[in-house]
Image 1 (spheres, one colour):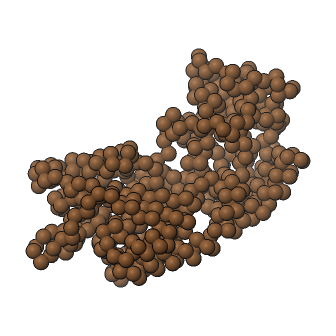
Image 2 (tube, helix red, strand yellow; image 1 turned 45 degrees about the vertical axis):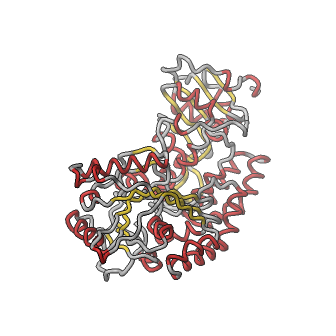
Image 3 (cartoon, one colour; image 1 turned 90 degrees about the vertical axis):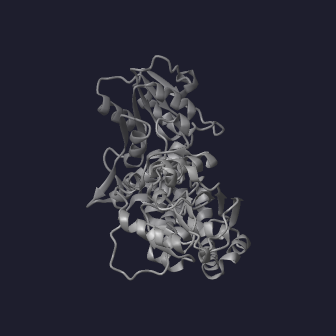
Amino acid sequence: MAITTFPTVNKCSSNGRENHTVVADMDGTLLRGRSSFPYFALIAFEVGGILRLLFLLLVSPLAGLLYYFVSESAGIQVLIFATFAGVRVSEIESVARAVLPKFYSSDIHPESWRVLSACEKRCILTANPRIMVEAFCKDFLGFETVLGTEIATYKGKATGFVSPPGVLVAEKKADALKKAFGDVQPEIGLGDRHTDIPFMALCKEGYMVPANPKVEAVTREKLPKPIVFHDGRLVQKPTPLTALLTILWLPIGFFLACLRIAAGSLLPMPLVYYAFWALGVRVTVKGTPPPPAKKSTGQSGVLFICSHRTLLDPIFLSTALGRPIPAVTYSVSRLSEFISPIKTVRLNRDRSKDAAMIKKLLEEGDLAICPEGTTCREPFLLRFSALFAELTDELVPVAMVNKMSMFHGTTARGWKGMDPFYFFMNPSPEYEVTFLNKLPAELTCGAGKSSHEVANYIQRVIAASLSYDITSFTRKDKYRALAGNDGSVVEKPVLQPNKVMGC
């Protein structure tokens, strides 16, 4: 059967499809991109670091030769082996759940999604390993069935090989469809290449998705579920060229990060702003910050209420003010504590103890707090803890925004000690610190407002200044989604640190 026997997907009507079933390929059909290399590269970097990514990049020419000149199956098997061999299955599942959805969701093909979203039952039939795509398709797009290549495992680790019947391409896709649906014939089949024809022929209608790199991806507002939380260190989708540039930049970036961190830690705070600019770190300050508290006059310190983007928020707040501002924090690594240029104090998650500690710190001067309790990368604000509103009426909201081009400076699954290094490894990271108006006295707890009213109001003010959406998600929601735990940290019996970093 020739490709020309199938019309293009734009000819497929999406009306009256409420009770229909659609079966679609992944790369080039559901997604605009026809190559699965970037998603294998994401997994390789997250589970094996730079060496695993380098190995995958080195074997990718072989995979390409096999894919285009021998068989699709052989090329995909090479990618699977280079990415998965020796990796714990639980780690692969974790990356597929926490990292890949962000990249998949930014590449949805609009015409394919128009048809898919119109049908009640949706099935993905892909040559990619099922373990890679299932979490995204089911949790974020509402697919009922995900059929993909099954990876072979031994004692909880991937062997790098695939289980029978092998990589799902051509007739094996058709066989998988028959096994899953039996005598029931799906109404629509969507594909993008000749090896999709066998399964498309089993559907009542078949449509080809033509290659069109200029087509715009579906916007996040049109998807059934937004990506609020995601993990992983890489900012950009790692195409072969991007992956190569990342590998080449890493040693340079790490040296540059060490230099920037040393400047921030060792120089007097009034000079840090200028040192950062000289080293390529851009800090933009907006609004009018309040003057420092005068302890000699008995003036209580101001509590800066910051939106939370990375653990470096209090550092850049101090940089913007030109003076060190103590901060309260939940938990950071000992390495971050060691390199910190500011004094902060750990919260105990005991409300009465934390309240007494914050009050004491405010008596000594200004203080910073991030009431979300954890970071969020997307344009959303998490729920604000209301404790801070009960402790003082001197509240100044601060909107934090940062920009990174290569690496994310936060993690839920990895070692947090590397967070500042990854942020400063970006070629030219940026931070924007916006000081908003001090909370009017009539809107504070001292004027009769409840702490929750005050916290919610400040959340709305910061969200409006950033054009962010407000959510009721908490730290526990984030860590359950990304790491499979509630984000609690078991404290070890250590000496009280003199200073720690971020919050």
